Image 1 (tube, rainbow, N blue to C red):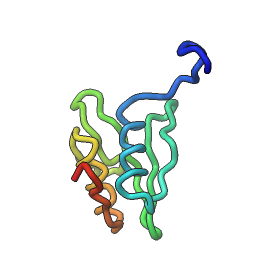
Image 2 (image 1 turned 90 degrees about the horizontal axis):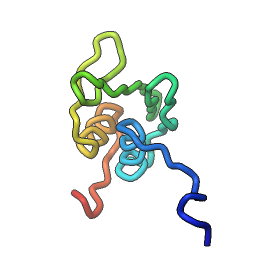
Image 3 (image 1 turned 180 degrees about the horizontal axis):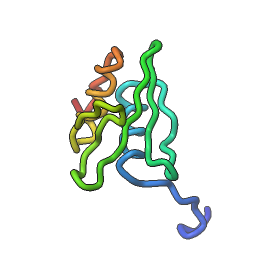
Length: 96
């Protein structure tokens, strides 16, 4: 077994957490891994597309569209809202 220091680094941050929550709660939603250079998470479901950002000033997720709008800071609730906005169902699993 490899030493702890030899293990690959896994990106951690708000958008990575939202990506993981979407994979877990709404696996039918297509989500691209967050782009650290651009700081966005692109999601899509049945022709609906959206871009999510993390607002460092407000410390919450937000829609990146012109009209924008805040999504909230709780990652699980944000995943539910994103899935709902795209028209996808959400799995509540053990945490819901």
